[in-house]
Image (cartoon, rainbow over all chains, first blue to last red):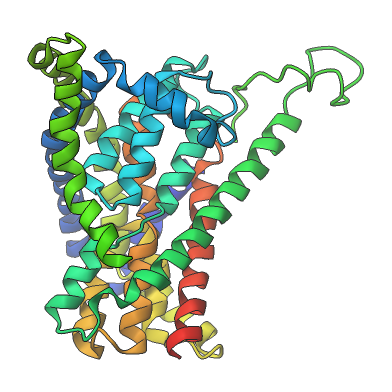
Length: 221
Length: 177
């Protein structure tokens, strides 16, 4: 899907640029985009270096395991494949609470660290596990209590009630997050059902296999 | 409630940065060495993301600059006007999952032109604040660990964007419409 979207955007972009006489803009946009890719990545260096340092201290002190143990049950229904007390749970929780508080700078490094921990559990390093997909679902919907950037912008333009969007944002973000979790669950089930039956076996029914589902298959799509 | 939450937001990072090393110190962790050891990974991780982000941002940038995005936005706006939704906010639905800076710029412009407390201003603020840039999150998170096949993650992200977009508009119409 990602291949199609990527290629599609470039090809459609080319066609529109050709028709609209924007070929020069096309070329400029290529290098603009490349430049901002590097700029954004470089911007991540400082926060990543710092937060990964802090989180290592937390890990060495056993703090993450402790958090995972205390709050683990809350997330374990979302991440059934991650062993209880695994450090990934600690990072996932840190990522979720940073998102909740609108601390984007801290949320991304912790989310990346959680991905790296989940990758250790991944039998096929190039294919996402269901747990990774769930983490991404939570992060793209990004449930937030305080949309700080927008409150600041509204304040800038003399809003009578800059924080007036807190309630509506919370409602929308909660709905989006629930939708993401539901969709994630749906696709997770679907891929489990679609799992290739044991190579030659005659019965492709789901019953005998479903007891110990592999968390992963290398099936594309 | 809002005051309390923003107070927690403001204090969270300073408290964490003080408390974590302090707690570790009482556990006899060599805090500074531990920090440096963990921080080492940060650079490599950020560098590993570059190819993914460059590839994705080039495609998005080309898509926007060619006028394709404008065309698409002009195409869907009238389709939804019938529901009493101000057509000005509709492009945000397309822009939001693709580019964080792009949609923030668009939102800021709507707020500037129509006023932050107008219906358009409220809807735009809510849409912008309620979800994250799906394509960016996917690129960065999968890029950082080198996962190529993201399976259904993109579908889930885009689906929740659509739901969030509709919910944002519905809630604002209900409260301020």
